[in-house]
Image 1: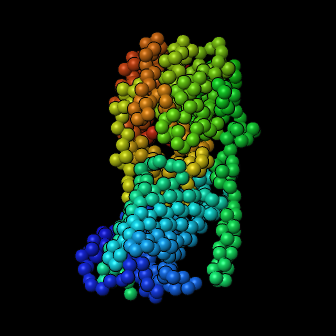
Image 2 (image 1 turned 90 degrees about the horizontal axis):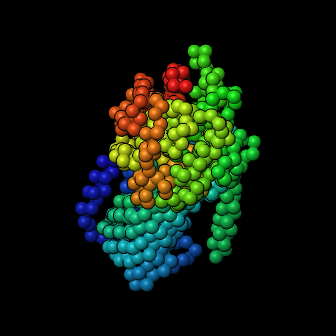
Length: 224
Length: 344
């Protein structure tokens, strides 16, 4: 499955079609995309599937993109581990090719482990600053993630081995994560390709047990 | 604009609702309280710290002190099966047993913060303080008589640190898969990540879980460490049991990251300690116990430690890895009784 996703992404690089949108990586009103991405992003080779659509919201002078992302870790695939994110993005500032875009993405993420299962609700706030034209989209992106509340349900294993009286239930403000990195996008006729990567920081933690402190995603969107 | 205002209002209300819930940093919610947070936990004040400590048996018997592994990644709960009766005998029949969680571990006092720990520079978590804590315990519980030390893994190193400093105060030593006695041996150990499956479910679970729990503070870091250990991230070369897992009171994550601290290693993580320079003053026979599955702390590796203790003896327990104290407590008690009957 992972090989299929990677092969598809690499093949898409060679699609050289003609028509162009106004700005690479930005949807016009009523324009839609479906996309896939993979790489390293809180998992090694996750699969991210997305749908986006451009809207004219509140008569704002630029189109607003709304969508949904579903991400699952691929290894030992388990439907108990997933993330659903409602995405939004709008241009905040445009001067020639220079552009600042941002958005707030409410999200729900879930994980089930041997010791507990956790379901979290929070949001990503992201800001892109860079240059865009019809074909290219290059810049820096910062994403701050805040989890507002997490429901934790422990297993008997945790109660037996660590803490018998652990309390299940909702816990507030359990996580914050920061990602800072570059974004490169190239627009083709019906496809947008993108690559982003950089540092990823969870709390104050530098590293632990071989978990990378980085993110890197390669993906493609099909426009219709 | 009206629509936008309503949207913002509902957004703020939603955020407030979502922020409801218990504080994950409160003791006794996700992780147990320590001796600083719950005065009813048995404890002992020594060397300006408060340790989770319990005694078992008759205080008039010879003192037998257990030193757990780590630093930080273990506590004395792992020794609890050693107190049970095997073949009609239990250690407390003959010995006054003392078990305690070292500073920064188990239910003992927490120290340092996440950032310091990565630099091996937590001020209170040093070899000097680990030694002073044990000196205080020995001086309090056995001021006039020699003590018996039992150490597992890092606890074995800790025991030898004490023997090296006070060879005249130790009557016997039992070492269950101890770590290295000096930096030369420890720096040669190849503790690599080679056996960890980066593409496996365990690694991905812990990575994915960062979106749910961030280790910003002690409690959350301890919780994350426990998740890592019990979801399969411990190195395979230690061959821990997968069906009868080693329990803990709490993982002392900061103490674990801080490792031996600033007087046991340099800021690059190279070890500098030496617990061997006075071992020639300790002629007593020492008992080594090893499992046969551990791929790192093997009987062959222990020969380097045993070179400093010419009269030592090695006993192998079959079919067990580094959690041998938990999996094979009866074998330990039997070997200890035989050994102590001989040397005391």
